[in-house]
Image (cartoon, rainbow, N blue to C red; front, side, top):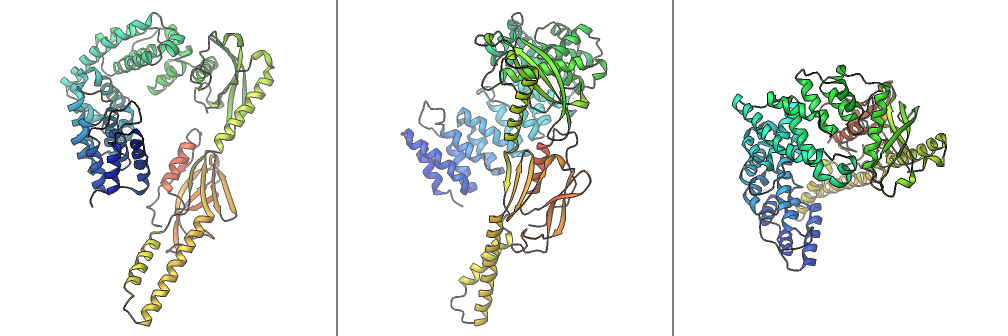
Length: 586
């Protein structure tokens, strides 16, 4: 198939000297997603993305990026070669998008091309190795760090490669390093740490929450992250020099780095003073981080957590909530726990909230003095634990304005309104799909109709008429089914609509989900189908009673299961998925 003409027109518009015409070209490119593109067209676009485009001061006006971005919507292995061939000519944003596409393809060919591109271009361009995306979406990490190991001498790529090594170590993924390579890694960790340590020490003496989250912000948080990677690696690559670095880090003012040093030393049997452990456990920034790291490395028996520590988790949660608040980001100077409230939540679980008050000496906030906040909800029978459902809220109401009970009532009402909004958000919505048999029947009918001319056999016309009747009946039945039927998934409920009938189930009441081959139910698609039985998605409650069944033709089972698992992952008893055979209902 040749390159589609519309894409040649779009590329021509993207090269137009007039900004408005280029904007129209970008818009047409986006609209073209609906109709798809041939492989030849995609290869053409990836080649054209490396051509020269008019210079522009507008961020959105990047033809190279938009062309590569369009191709990123198509997961085709044939795109690997043109990406590698034209990579150097892409714009900076297009380069990053091209790397993202290779990761998304998640094949050995894509991985090898990705490695070659990084090796060839890392010194010339600032290429971001998307560590988290690579680790979560592929199994490339061991091969990547093996092939790119020498790039840890380049500061631009060193942190990313060390981060990949750290993730592999933390997840017990074997790395194919020789003894010499391990020694090389140890020396390079020292080199990078010395470099990052110099940057950090410029901040350490003046460490202050207002500086960290306001004045320094991203510049400091990058230094913290890079230092943290080095300190955490030292628990896996350890020698006398590492021991000295970790001991020094115990004196750092940054509590996150102090925690990283504590955990790395503990892994090598070093006894840590109780005063340092208490500091990490109660610090307003690091309380939850300390608990999490102890739990991750099975060190909770070394340090005992009590209700007092729960108060530190609450303060830590409120602190992070306040500094990240999208409308009123504020750094609290003081937080006090007023009262604990035990109750049941929407999911019928025993949970705990904490009524708190806070104040800030920041400009424009000092006059407000103490303000109320509601923190939670924590799982009651797991306390002390930082695990919570995210329902922390504040209206920045002055503490003296209401009594404790009035503050609680106001904040609970705000919480309920917020949760009700979230509960109504539609996550998935699906209608019954068109059956392949209907497409085939339509094709067959069209072919037979085309060959009918010149044929005077009345039996042939009778059979053709019968074929048309069956085809039109199936089309009508499918249209009616799609008009009257729908599956709707919100963050709290799953609803099946069939005509005027509406049936909903609460997600937290689902015990197990499975696939069962059954005969068609009433008004569930039998007239539009071509088989007597179909795979049903069936839901059972805690008593193993069926509470809902949905034909798998209404919605993709794997997608529905995935979303339900994500929406119920916070529950103590989340729904289970039973192993099932491949869906044969299509």
